[in-house]
Image (spheres, one colour):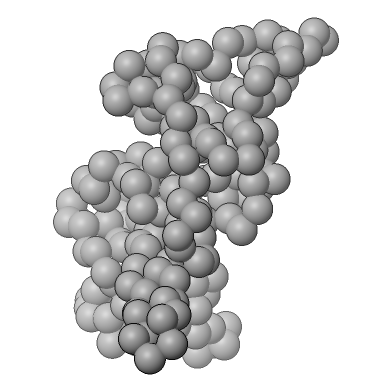
Amino acid sequence: MKLLNYCFAFLFFVSSSVFAQKALSNLISSEGDMNGKVRFELRDNFSGSAYLYDKWDKSGLIYTTAEIYLVAGINLNIESGQFEIKVSKDSIFKIEQIAIDSVKIDNDTFKYDVLKNKKFSQVLFESNKVSFYKTFTLVVKQGTYNPLNGNTTPNTYSPKEKYAIFFKQEILSNFNLNKKNILNLFLNESNLIEAFVKQNKLSYNKESDVTKILKYYTTL
C-alpha cells in the first residue's frame, strides 16, 4: 500500500477492501470549480463553534458513485450544511457535495439534500415506509457592548439539533419527538405502537427509542 502525502490530508481509495492511491482534487470545491482550491478563514470574533464536532480529529469515509475515500480532519459546517477539511491552523477546504452520495464519520451517516434543503442531514433510520433524519442549525447570538466599561461580549454560536421524518412522500421538518406527534403520525396503528412502547419501556422523546418505534412500524 502506497501513501501519498498531501498538504491537507492523507487520502486513500477503497476498492474491494484494498486501499489504493486516489487524488482528492475532484472533491475540492472553489465556488463550483471542482478542481479548484479555496482558503477559508476561521472566524476569530465568535465564541463557540460553527462545526458539528468540537475537534478536527475525525476521519471519514466519503462515498461517491464509483469510489470511496478515506480522509482525515473532516467536519460538518452547520452554517452551510457542507463538509470541510481543515488544512492548517486558520484555513479549511470545502468538499464539493455534487459528487458525493454519502459521508460516514464514526457510526454516523450523512446524506445530501434528502430533505430538499441543499444540506447534509444525518440518517437515523431509512426504509421504504418511513425515514428518520437529524438536522443541525446554528443559533447565532450577537454580542453586546457595555458603554460603561467599554467591554464587548463576543458573538456566540449555539448548535441546535432538529428532527425530520419522511413519510408518505411528505417531509415533516422540525418534527418534535413526543407521544402526540408520533401516535398522530401513525394513527391507524397507534394502539399497536402504544402497546409496543409500553411493553419495551420506550420513550417518545428519546432519539434512539423513536428509531426503534419506527423500525417496529415497518413490520406492521
